[in-house]
Image (cartoon, rainbow, N blue to C red; front, side, top):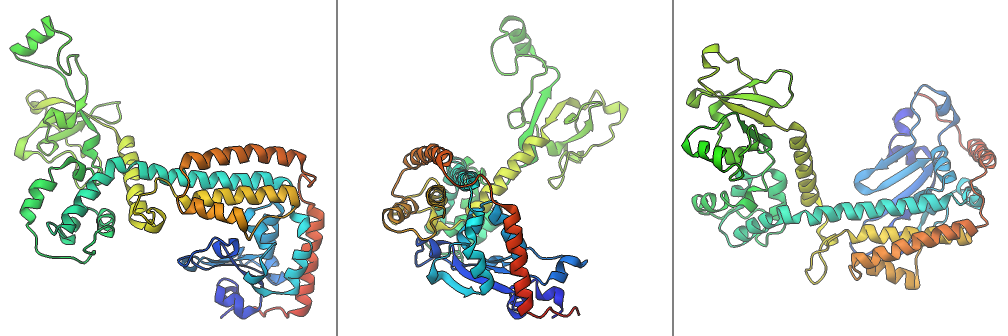
Amino acid sequence: MNTEQLYSTVAGLKESGAIIFEAVSGSHSHGTNTPQSDLDLRGLFILPSEWHKSIFHAPEEVSIDSQDIKYYELKKFIGLAADCNPTICEMLFPPADCVRVMTPAMEKLIRNRHLFISTKAYHTFSGYAVAQIKKAKGQGKMVHDEGKYEPGIARLQHWMNSHRINKAWVEKHFSSQVCQSVCKGCKVGVNFNREVNTERADRLLLSDQEVLRLKRPHRKDFCWFIPTKRSGLIYGLKTRFLPYMGENKWPVRPEPLEKSGIDLTKYNAAALEHVDGLYRLYYYGDEARGVFRDEGLPVLEPIPIRDEWSRFKGLLLYNENHYKEAVRDWERYFEWRANRNENRWHGKDGTNFEFDHKNMMHCMRLLLSGENILKNGEPIVRFQGDNLEYLKGIRNGKFAYEKIMAEVEQRMKDLEGIKNASTLPHSSDKKAINRLYLEIVDEWEQTHSSKVWS
């Protein structure tokens, strides 16, 4: 392993001897862990000074994302600590039972941790708390979007649980994300492939609007037809004597494509000059090449002069931006739905949560910890007593969203007053921190031989 590789992986860091600190973090350090909680690790490492003078990229973080393991390079760590980053501040106050590696370099850093504590904590801890609210509300928006998608998912799950469809049928008609979402909630398991009456399922389910809503948005769903003229006795009478009756009573008014009866596979399209998203439609029946092919943009065809009047039927309005937005929302929802941790969305009694309780627990934890910094000069890392029970209650769905938010809003107001009354400095002493950093690096290098460049 060459020197560059040595400091770019966790295994390399351990081999190099560059790690100066390692501790268990997350729920195990906070005291909020459950038997299902993952074990998170955080640590620090020091790079030889030649790294900062070389042409090679000096890694600021080395991690194993799949295992939630992360090590910060000392210079990056100190910069974050000087800004009162909540995660970094916690590492300066580790519970003794969480520490796995402690070196003289880290001991010196901890002895001087007061240099990093300032009223900046008000902004960082409250800012991180707000971010957790946004995550919880963002997931809540996903949940409240279930009015759009969940009825269809529930219907497919019911049919699968009653052995009327199987996984193969769902895979045939829907995306892999939808299939995964459906199969996750089925009692029969995702590998259930019992023979089913696919003809009956096609007839009943593929005409169900709630089920069809699960399909990926199609461009034609964002099209409108604009007839350029109406003919016939009834229309003439309505226009002349009953101008306020019926749809599209006014000239050149768009109507949804599905209501117009227009089948775009029977038409060719040509661009309307000087206008984006608007096309002329010409009816060619079975000879048509179609407007959309393979879910691509409208395909434009040259229209012979002889067909301009005889085949022209009207204008097609296509809203590309709304289509892309709908696809993004659909993909985001089903990616979240397929990959979410079900334990965080269902209570022990089977009730569905309407927001991510774990995010809201972290929000309250950050507010409590930030308050303690401003009052006592250090964060709360290991929670105990009433505070711990309160956090666990939030996580377990004991409190309604409105009640938690009322508490959050009050604590946010109180936090500002606590900040104004705090005796902490407004910002950290960068010169003192820089001296500390140089001392730690110099002392470390005196006891560690520099790695030879390979």
